[in-house]
Length: 246
Image (cartoon, rainbow, N blue to C red; front, side):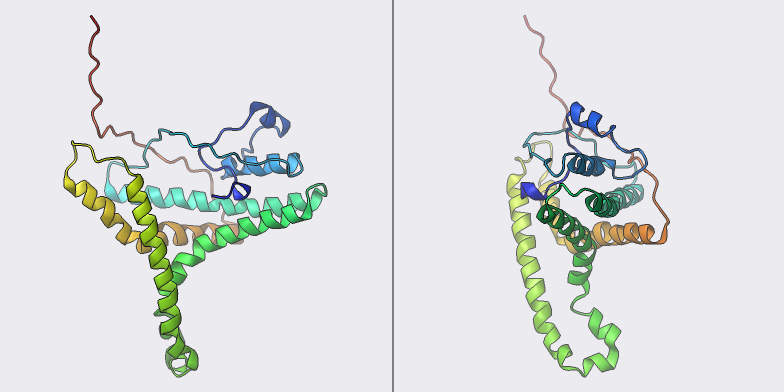
């Protein structure tokens, strides 16, 4: 990641003195963990940034007792994450009233946020439907146009580029995974690779659709409340027994 593009999200630490300066976090927004960054960014006239720290963290899994409930909870969680687009309005309003922040910094911050939430919703749908949607929606009129003959070439280019990126991400992710514990069979390793085959579908189900719903809710005034994700702590690998000394 490029540090100048980062904002706080989920696991982060904020100095207590900085929290005092902005009156702590806002309690009337859903994405308060990212809003606090923009509160401090505006409070310090743009002289505030995120410092990435490579540090292991232990987190509970978003896993319900049943599969269907787990899928539903994942959807709600991703919908809450994509609801962070609500910060765009705050950023635009705050930037208009703070003339001490450099204009170039304002423009870059706004464009990064808008492009990020826009691509989060549109890119999975475009890649998923770029090959067949125009032919179905356009009908015979589109099928007789010159563009319809160029569509396979354009679609092939985009899908090939996306496939290269997906394969590279899968390979890099699998290489970073620690060695498979002896308690688990080979099927766990097979499932780890097979899950990447579902990425085109999971991106649509857990990125594009919840993101579209979040933005549609903001547009129509059907605002979300804060939904606390139910977590389940599962001890997959038994902890070794402590041996008494002496």
